[in-house]
Length: 606
Image 1 (cartoon, rainbow, N blue to C red):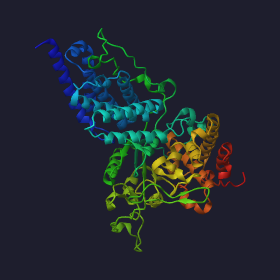
Image 2: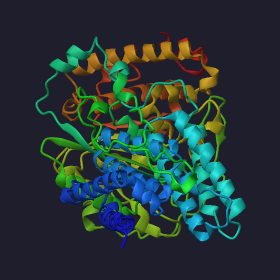
Image 3: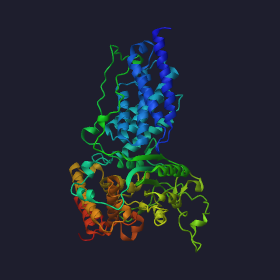
Image 4: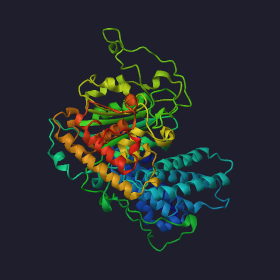
C-alpha cells in the first residue's frame, strides 16, 4: 500500500468518525440546558482534527484524488455545528463563526469546482449540486440573522441561478422544493428590506440606552428583581412570511432580544485566501482548501455586553410539543428568573390571515376565506366551572396551532398556561383572539404573570397593509421596530422618508422613551410585576414600546373601536403613562407632526 493510500484511508476514517459524532448532536433539541455538553466538545474536536489533517496532508490527498467539494462539505458541517450551538445558546460568537466558515466556502468556490458540463460526473455531480443548494440555504439563514443585507441579496441571486441551472441540466430530477425555498427568501427579503435605512432590531447601547434616564434606572430598587435569561418564541399562521424554519415574527422577536455588538466588534473577521505549501492549484476538483482559523473568535465578541437571553425558537409546533418545551424551560429556570413566552397564532381554526382591519377612511376589509370551525370537544374539567355552573373561560377560546380538521388537538387554551404561572412569566400573545387570555390575570398559581395582549384587529391607513401573510404582525412590529411600525401604519415606506427625517423622528421617540423611563422608575403606583423586571434592558424596552403602540393606536382609531384595536397589558401600568396622559400624547403628536401625518390621528388639543 502506497503512502498516498495510507493518507487517504486515514482521511476517510476521520471523515466517517466526525460524521458519526455529528449525527449524535445534530438532532439535540434547541431548547433547555443540554446536560451532555461533552458530546458537543467531542464533535468539535473531531472536525478540528480532520481539518488540521487535511491541511497537513494536502499534497498527498490531492494526488489521491481529493475533490474540492469534499473540503467544502467539511467546512459546511463546521458551519452547521456553530449555527446549531448559536440556536441552543444564543451566543453571538457561534453565529459569527458559522458566517466565517460559510463565507470562506463561498469565496473559494468549493462546490463550484465540480460544476462541469462534462458528463463524467453523472449522478455524483448531482449529489454535489444538492450539497451546494443546502449550503446556500444555510448561509442565507445565517446572513439573515446577522443582518448582512448585501450578502443576503448576493446569495439569493446565486441561489436562484443555481436552482435554474439544476432544473435545466437535470430535467429528470424534481427541484420543486428548492424553487419554493427561492420563493421564500424573495418574499422574506421584500418585507425585511422595506425599511433598509433604519436602526438594528437588536438592543443597541447607541440607540436604546438613554443617558438622561440611566441614573434613575440604576437607582431603581424593587423588593424583588428578576433576571431575564430564557425565552420561548413561536408563531403559527397559514402562509406566513418565513424562510426555512424562521418566520418573520419570530425573526423580529429573536433579534429584539439580543445585544447589538458595537463598533469593530460587529465587523466580521477578514478571511484570507492563503494556501499552504506550494500546491496552489485552482483547476476544479484538484484544488485544495485555504486556511480557515477554527478557533472561536474571542476578539469578535464585545466583552462589555452581558450574554444574550437563551431563546428556544420553535417552528410550527403541535400544542403538546409547545407545552413540553415550556415545561422544560420552566423546570430549568433559575431562581429569581423570569421566562418570556411569545406566541403568535390565529384564534380561528383554518383561518386565512387576512384580518379585518380599521383604516382611517372608515371602511373594513374582511377575510376572503372563512373556514367554518370544526366541531370541538366542549367538555372541560369541573374545576373550570364555577359554583354557578358557568364556565370560567379557561377552556372556551384558544390559539390555533395545527393543520385543518385537527379539532381540539390543535387548540392552546388559556388554561393550558396556568400551570406555568408557578414561576415568573412574561407572556406576549399576538393573535386575533388574544383577549381571551385576560382570564389568566388573577388565576395564577404562584406568580402574577405579566401579560401583553395584542389588538384583535390591526389598524392601517392603507387596508392592504393589514395582510399578515405579507407584512407580519403589526403588534410584533411595534414591539420590535416601533418607528417602522408607525410609518407602516400611516402608509409610509423607506423610499417615502428621507434618512434625515427618519433619524430625527427616531430622536424624538428616543427622548420620549427616556422621559417615560423616568416616570416608571419614580412612580409610586408601579405594580410589583413590572417593578421586578424594569431593571432588565430588554423587558424595559418592550414595556416602553408597548406604551407607544397603545398610545398610537388609541389616537389613530375612534374611541368606539378601542376594544378591538387596542392592546392590553395586565397588571395595569401607571396611569401616568396611559394614552390620556399629556406626556405620552405629546410625544406621539411630536412624531406625527414631524412626519406630517398629524391629520391621521384624533389628538386632544396639545
